Image (tube, rainbow, N blue to C red; front, side):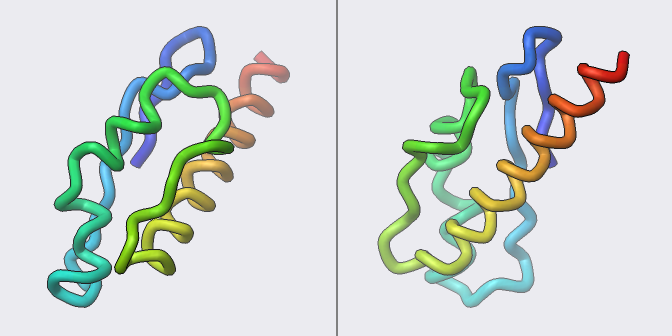
Length: 78
């Protein structure tokens, strides 16, 4: 889940990695610094993936990037 501020910056993110491999993909939700690295951004460019959970963290970045694009579209139409 991604929450946005009125100015389009990311207010916060939450990842459900409960179906991911324990100790690997679950790092996406367990590593709070990963979620914190999105705060205040308007793009996911420059957010690093998590070593050992590259596929899961890349998927999380992609999903957040899609949410950013969707929010921008909604703001345009508002």
